[in-house]
Image (cartoon, rainbow, N blue to C red):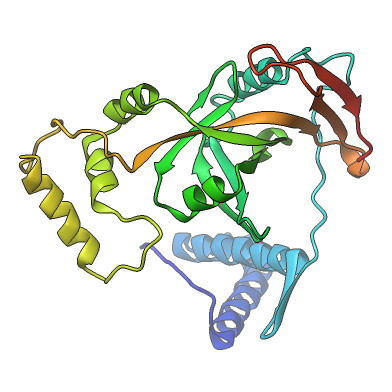
Length: 288
């Protein structure tokens, strides 16, 4: 018997708590007689586990109709100690080392927060996928008519943040942006799954769309490029409105979580006038 509970009703919570108390009492009385049936043992185990999880939830946060208050105080610990003396001279090399080391340990380590701003300074953030690190910076791909692209065109500066919870590390990047070459965008676009290439044509990213309208656009693109049901590949060209952005860093910070909030923070600041191909960096330790 599979049981699934969603504790959205106070009556359900009361009933589960009552069941748990009754079974716990019964188990104490009959433990010496070994008279609990297998279903009773399973229910007892389930209710004990559920009670523990409910207690943990109460210790983690308090929720009210008009607010949420987080009570937990997560502690961080990384065995590695980082300082200006232990990191690599170039932040891109240091990022490559960290990113490589978390493969298989962190789920979707390429997920990063991208923050942009309008010309008036109004900020906007979203999660995108990091796709390439080259000698100039960090590359991601998107629709050039999207909100993020409009803001990057108005204000060619951006901030990135990677957070790798499983290993208590984060990386923060600040820099100016530039479009990658069409050849680079073409190469990446060709590597995408067929559905993703069709989706790039079908979606007018960041515009208002009707409930079933997007699916209709998708079908239209399939017909336009001769894609039939069951096809796993097709000749879908790169749209003119789609491609990559590169964040060329002027500042990069590496963060390693430590107990008592005494985290390691190492910041690279690019020296003024140093070339993009071989920038020079000032490396400093920051107070947590």
